[in-house]
Image (cartoon, rainbow, N blue to C red; front, side, top):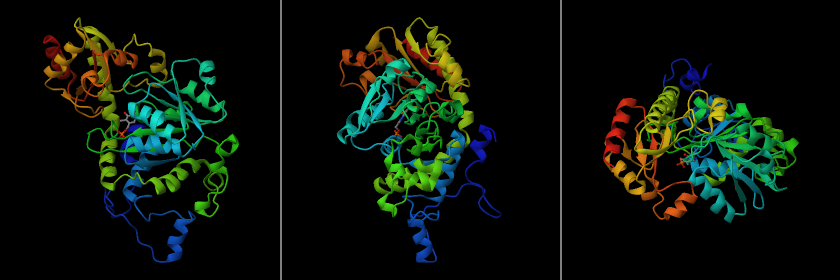
Length: 422
Ligand SMILES: *Cc1c(COP(=O)(O)O)cnc(C)c1O
């Protein structure tokens, strides 16, 4: 099946007389006929649902669809994107371990790795993603256990050289984790370029309608945990399952199985069946929406780039973007829907533009069907001085625009009218 068909057909496959549309199994628990049958589930000798924290048929179908869309061997949904980031790292790392992470990642990821996981003894070195392989290699330590980056970074909009990061990881026998939230598998499938684990905040384009928080971790099945020799938790007995060894019992699905049966069991950041149902509806049109978001964003970015009231535009799809070679390689079908730009007149002018927009709403969210805009300097980052903002790559004039799937001409007219108010 091609990717468009997978969006519709993968996951739920009804039998004779069953519901045509994915049912919502709004049940926390599942019935068995004997203690022995249920006991096998707890020993991981048989597979089946018993408690929705560990798995649910509605959730399971959506996990299957996302795994197929990314080209992975299995997936686990989580209650939010943050939970997916957390669990992807914690499945691999323990206190004393170290991660290399692109500095151009989502703010929540910076906090998670730089502050919260650091408190728990997992240290992160944030690196310039455009640094050479030689420079990146110099940050590797004996205890480095993973490399992390974002395909299209939120909000920097830099494009990750996935093959360079994969080479860094694999030449050190460690896996590459890629947050593919902004690209989605419609625009880029990181496994095809060497990523080992892909994560998403499904709250963004995958859901696409701003109705359900969620996250997902997908296992590419490509990393050989046993051959690496660096991951004893995968290759030595787990006492909480009678001495089971993940790499032996689950082969190339060892990572995603361990994530579920250890971490989801213990941390419990599970998605609800209702949210999985809503996510599935979003996934059915993901292929149509991602093309529309990309086409509209390109038109809007082109309009802004040619407007004398605009100081600068950052959109990786623009022909003069410094990421053009990476876009040609990794994102040939489009560069998603988020554009950032600065207006002449700085902070005051930016606020005026935001307050003048009629169609585009001011929200902190990005990546749903409706066009929305944010001025970080006066909202999400208002505690920072202009100097601190500039250091973080977020100028006081920066406007982040999440271009929706309305008619592009209406979005541009709205921006044009707002810019006239400066
Ligand atoms: C939003 C976002 C997250 C966090 O996801 P939540 O669903 O909000 O918890 C992680 N990564 C990226 C790239 C995001 O945009």
